[in-house]
Length: 156
Length: 148
Image (cartoon, rainbow over all chains, first blue to last red; front, side, top):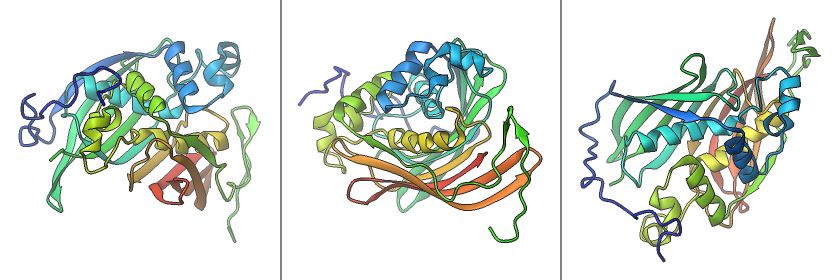
């Protein structure tokens, strides 16, 4: 069955120029800018069945002291994935092995999330090529919202 | 915990907890291919393992799998339910992905208190956390440290 989303389908990592060997520890990518909107927060909440009023009701959120509706913590992964895919860091078929997440200031609708990626580590384990990427996402290029370290297995 | 003295502090205009609850509220999420597809659109992650049935069928997984961050978000929701805020300021979550979540799975996130400390800002609690599917198979295991 064809890809239901109509995307081009699997593309050879080599054909796209991706190479595990070419990535070096300390190498950086970005920044990628992601505009956080009420719509994307609402969409995320609907997808996950979450109904926290501070994420869905601007008035409630502002009464609580937030600038606008607040991104749920799980949206931290959206910031990282948006940056990862737009900055073309890794090929398709990567397998997620682990996550280490530190959450700081809450991002709100109307903020622009600026994410930079750094290659933190590379190692071989049981004949598999592992890579650890560190994503630092800042609110409007200033305060840190989240530091997300992702460990992944490079596709064979 | 025996011998632990915890002082209650005023925090964000409400009285802080005296002790962390022994377990997290559980959260559940049903995984469907449609949800995976919509998550791909929201995240821009169209990894064919998630969205290309033909490609994924030939992979080691034998079919499409959910983005690992979907069940992990379910776990964060449990933590948020405990904290009363959607964003977990000051939290540290460390997780390993043990097995994939697949369309048709029902994922349940849970956590058990493994330790807590108190300071002038309140309580920091550490939970051993996990996500399991409907067969009791672990999908994710890890720890979560949160400020209460």
